[in-house]
Length: 66
Image (cartoon, rainbow, N blue to C red; front, side):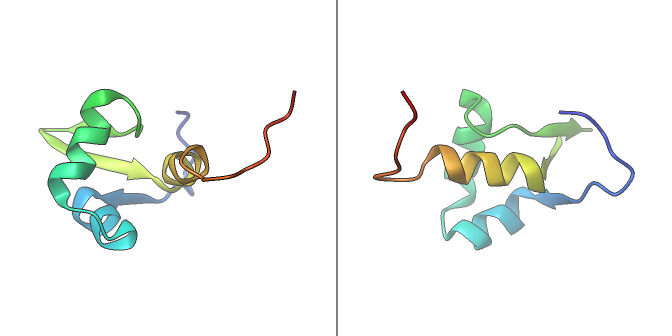
């Protein structure tokens, strides 16, 4: 993940609310490496681009290029 001065970050709680998943589930995705996050003093922040990629990676019935 590269930093951009216009980069927007979300908290675990915000991502949890957006995806309608529990906070513990979001932490599980972060710890497993499925959701890229940054850690600052024990607090995680998720970039909007990382969240978009995560959502895209979990799309169902999406056509894959061969």
